[in-house]
Amino acid sequence: MERVYIHIPFCKSICSYCDFCKVLYYGSWVTQYLNKLALEIVDKYQGEVIKTLYIGGGTPSALDIKNLKYLMEIIKILNLSNDVEFTFECNINDINEEMLLILKENRVNRLSIGIESFDKKKLEFMEREADFKKTKEIINLCRKLGFKNINVDLIYGIPKETERVLKSDLDKILKLDVEHISTYSLIVEDHTKISKIIPIDEDLDARFYEIIVKKLTSKGFKHYEVSNFCKDGYESKHNLGYWNNEEYYGFGLGASGYIGNIRYTNTRNLSKYLKGEFNETEEILSKEDVMSNELMLGFRKLNGINLQEFYNKYQVNLQEVFKIDEALKNKDLIYKDGYLFINPKKIYVMNEILIHII
Ligand code: SF4
Image: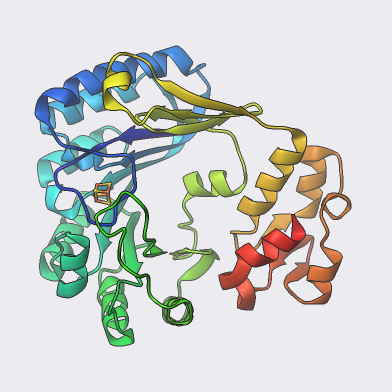
């Protein structure tokens, strides 16, 4: 096991569309939470060398300095490799020199910043804040303090969003000159403040996706996963672990992990977590389940699945387990240089293609 995800669920305000595992920031819960997080890590972690560590949320940057230092002490339980990729998620409004120095001292080398948009109406809809000038200044500060690997997130497909608005967001994000951009189409989830709204038309969503891919790739970004783009050599190693169906620990409220043939999910109930009742569900996966996951996750990558590696992992040829002949004939799938991948022109409809194959 080389990968660890740690969830910090606290947010200073709640975004209208959010279905993540989060709770409104309440100072006196944070230290209690971190105490339990430390216990969970000590209980489950077997001492392996960790190559990727991702602290996500919620909003990890919501922690005050005292608790941020405490979190960094807890991380020392883990045996991080010399070349670890250590990502820390931030809200742009939380970033300041003092917190960046603490992150730097503790080997954080990748920042993931949830910008989502710079458009006033989109931000109002999402109940978020972002200001281009301030963001640029903060990113300059991150650069000054030596952070060379920065991701920003963009959300699109907000009701009434136009192509002009999306293009303006893309232009501004490109001006930030970051190494990695993650894009997400708005999903209307139950139990969120926007659960009653009507999502944008599918054709428009597809058009938006096309605009994003065209714009970012024309500016030299590599489209390496359905929703993710990077400059050369800046793929997210941690997320590639998920898409390669590799094992990982998940620690913290609502976190999931995958160890051996077991996928587990922690409770999303903060009271239970604070009592030390961490695990909620455990699913034992059959070999068929694992191979199906390999396919569903692997085809998210634009370069798809290496057939020899699939054989080495499962001692069976992928084409003997899944019905791929028709998909190859229809050019839904392409085979090239040992890799099988979804036709890039059809990546937007990959879910339908996968249903046929699996
Ligand atoms: S900051 Fe992230 S986790 Fe927190 S409410 Fe907003 S979307 Fe959800």
